Each structure stands twice: as C-alpha cells, then as structure tokens.
Image (cartoon, rainbow, N blue to C red; front, side, top):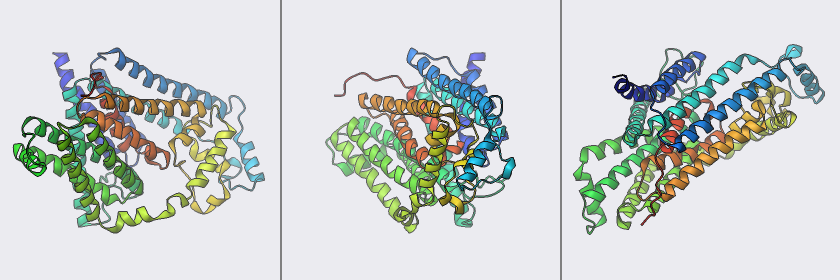
Length: 461
C-alpha cells in the first residue's frame, strides 16, 4: 500500500518542484529555496531505488561533487573569516594603493551571511538531479514528466503573451524591486526567461517530432509523396498533433517576445541540432526525415520572421561584449589568481569583487555577479571545485551525445537531454542566467531524465 502511494505521489511532488521553480524564484528568497528544498527531499524519500549500477554511479558522482563543494566551502569559511588569520582589510588597503574603487570604507569585509543560502541552492540542485535520475528509470513516466513540463511552460507563456497584449509592462521577465505577491514577474531579466523558454521550446519541438515519427512509421505508407505523407500523418491523430504544435508555437512565441540575444542564438543552434539528430536517426526513411526537417525549418523560420524587428535588431547589436563583460571577467580572473585553491568563500562574490574591480567599471555601479558561472565558482570556491564541476558537466554532455549516436531510432528524451546539456554551456558561461533556479531546475530535470534511460548498444541499420 505504501509503495503504491509512493509511486503515485513521488513523481507529482518532483514535477511540482520543477514547475513551481519558475514561479517562486523571481526573488530567489531563502523562503522559496527552503520550500522547494522540502518538496525535493520528500520526492527523494518516495523515489524508487536505482535499478542499475550505471545509475548508482551517476548518483554517487553528483553526490560526491556536492560533498566536495561543501567541504571546500567549510575550509573557505575557516580561512576567510578570521580563524586562520585571513584579513580582508589588508586587501582593501592594497586595492586603494592601486587606486581601485573600494566601497564600504575601512569597515569593509567579506559577508558570510550568503553562505547558508549558497549551500541550500547547491543541495536543491543536487536533489532535483537525483530525483530526475530515479524517477526517469520508468521511460513512460519520464516522457510524461517531459510532456507535463512542456505543457506547463506553454500555459505560462500563453499567460505572458496575454499580459503583454493587455499591458506591455506586465511580462514574466519584468525587472521589479518587489516580487512578493506578484506572479507576473518571476524572472529578474529577459535573459533568464529566454533561457527557460529556449529549453522547454526545443523540448516541445522534439515531442512534436516524436509524434510525427510515430505516425509516419506506423500509419502512413512509404511510397506516398512528401506532402501526402505529412497530411496523412496529421489526419491520423489531428488532435494530438494540433495540441503539440500549439504548445510548441506558444513556447517559442514567448521566447521571441523576450528578445533575448543569447536565447535567440542558442535556440537557432538547437534547431540546427534537431535537424542533425533527424538525419542521424533517420525517421522511418530518408524521405520522412527530409519531410520533417523541412517542416521544422520552415515553421521556425516563419515564426522568426513574424516576430518583428525587435529580436533581429538586438542580434545585430554589437554591444553584447561592450557592456563591461570583458572587464568583469578580467577583474574576476585577478581574484581567482589571488586565491586559486580555496577562493574567497561560497556566496562572497558581491563582497570580493570591489577588491579587484577595474577602473573601467566605475560607471556601472555595483557588480553582483561574474556573468560567468565557471569564473564565479573559481573565485568563490577555488579552481579545483570549478574544474571538478565543469568537468562533470562536460562529461555528462559527451556521455549523452554518445548514447544518442548509438540510438537506432529517434529518441526525444535523449535528444532533449543532449540539446539541454550543450545549450547550458553558453548560457552559464557568458550571462547571469545560472542564478535563476526557474531555469536551473527544469535543466537538471531534463538532463537527469535523459541520463536515466538505459543505453542502446544495438548497431544502427
């Protein structure tokens, strides 16, 4: 009885975390982190045990990464806050001798108050990933989870479009000071909303292609012409295909509405990746592959053309790397070289950055983030932890790609995992999107669900 209850409740709690994350993480308060952390812990208690050694290794590797991060963070606290004589005031004096701006006056010091929140964020990410691995063992459940995430995102995107039509100032990525009781702005900037919609938009497109592949393979004769094959496939299950197409269009429309340059470029590469996957897996036949590839490219080209000049103008804008990013990265690199092994302490970037800030950034005001997750981790937690986490993510990405290359049929789950894993690299390397759990939670969920699928070792015909 208890196992039956766990099988029914556990997956729903896991999905609740992934779907609620974009709504609750506008302000990224400790309250919202604690709420999602409690739900994730409950889902993990109800999750099934790993069914293979491969899955157990993946769980152990991700858990070890979190433990290493926590241990290094404890050492950082020891060094950074007086127990071994680390003196931030000396760094302030050194910065002043170099004529660098140092806010805070003589009382300036590193603030350890963000350390607990940083640990909670890291633990929450680990639990979401573990839950995805464990609940993804059941392929039908994994596909249902991906469908649910995509549909929930389309609903939120439709709400965004409706709000924008009624009042252009009410959108999901509106920057606001107060988010409490305001669910029209859970994303703090357009880049984070664009990354989230890019992730779920390409997943929706993959589910649509999966449905077309199924119909073309089982219900449509192979000697028909390409237009006739597509029409026959549509009339075989018109409601299902119309629904998936609508979900895809709504999600991509929301993405185009953000006018995010990074998300627009990454989504374009994702479309090319989707087409490459189609030709690698050969949907039923070469003609079917060509038909779906042409349909996908034409559909997204028309949507991009209909989006207006907003996104195109932003893509043509060459100021992306002229907004202080090079100077921020250079200043962060100086901080890394100052303390390469242990860093300055988890969650202390906001306080450490003024000590190494370039004069070229004087007009930009306070710098809260490094605009690059690898650099920020290296400055806060040291190069060993940064190399460990980046290496683990790259290893996961390559592992998923290798599994996709061995697949004998089109696999929407693996394809979504591959595109999500590789798309995350530019998102977290040149922007501050990694600070928004509304993107991080669905990302880890999709990658975990893809990793949970058993390997396919049969040679492709």
